[in-house]
Length: 90
Image (cartoon, rainbow, N blue to C red):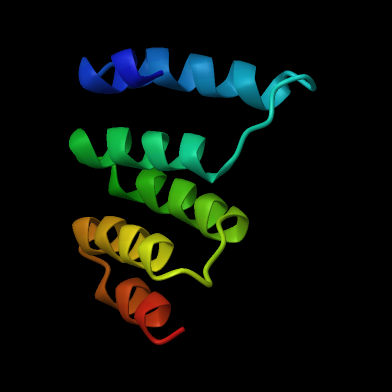
């Protein structure tokens, strides 16, 4: 998946992501959705990036400072300040 993101090949990345989500033996965690969000942001697909961030946010531990900083940075890259401040205020 990282290779597809690096090559800005979103159809390839989505194929891998879909396979991961469908495989009951594979655990899709927030880091997978983070990679997908980063890929979408890289190519300017903001709406899809925001969808991945919502999935990611629901899975990641928000107690630690590092995880919140990571999430805030990705939201900042979307340009959606309302989402950025919503997470910031948690």
